[in-house]
Image (cartoon, rainbow, N blue to C red):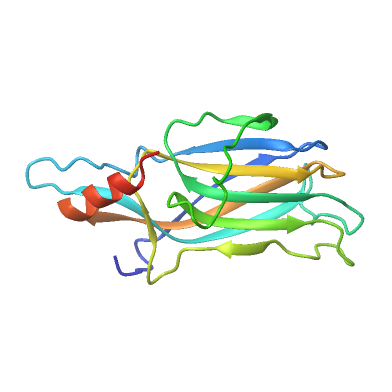
Length: 183
């Protein structure tokens, strides 16, 4: 699973918050990249995620969230199967889902609006895979989950760009990943 520039590609997803508190989920389908079933001599394959770059910006704009904006949110990219996409405010994320102790967490950030200059402060990243130890997804989707705990004063887009590569997995590694990525 060595990091190799010729094999790395990018995927992305985002979700828009509203001016109210609540949870939301955006789903990214990985079924064309992941095949956890070994067939004959062909091994199963997973999606190695090396890095997640986060972006929080004002909705329908390319600019950063203005300094006068208020609100707080936590967002995470999670290897998860079966949770439907929902708009922020109409979803429900279970307690202890967006935490570093959740084995399904790939990356997580906190954002506190109300900095002293445009775009300040940046999201605080509290969990991230690495080029040396990527998070390998063997399920057919990942979810971008957002929990807005204090309503944002403007609609914002929370997005992420995922640096990844398709990797071949031996049967024992594949079985272990399938067990750990089950809800």
